Length: 127
Image (cartoon, rainbow, N blue to C red; front, side, top):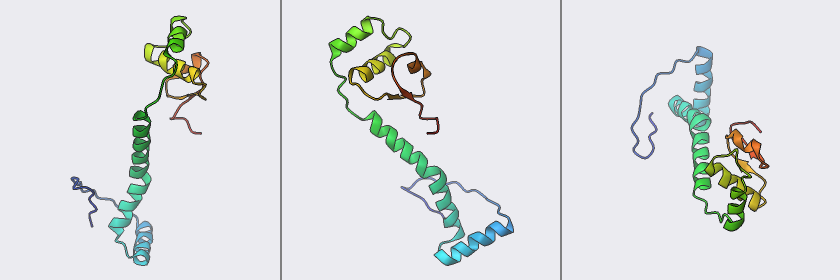
């Protein structure tokens, strides 16, 4: 049984299971009325595809947010004072916005934020 979403192209794979593993799948198949193929496909979807899709959705939501950066003269003054010399231009603006808005911090894998008074959470680190 092939499960295809949105007319996507398919690829065929072959997966070999030991007799005990396959017996478990057959038992679940009988109980649920689903084919072994469907069970394996569901497991792949739940374990690997859905989490990736959720992360992509979250990233898209973050990127599409419209945020008022606040008092530009105040941020510009902070930048001109060299408060963020250790940062590149974009990182300096991000840090200045976090500080100007009294935000808790920033989510970034960029370790450069540790050099200024901005709390930084690395999304790759386990919480």
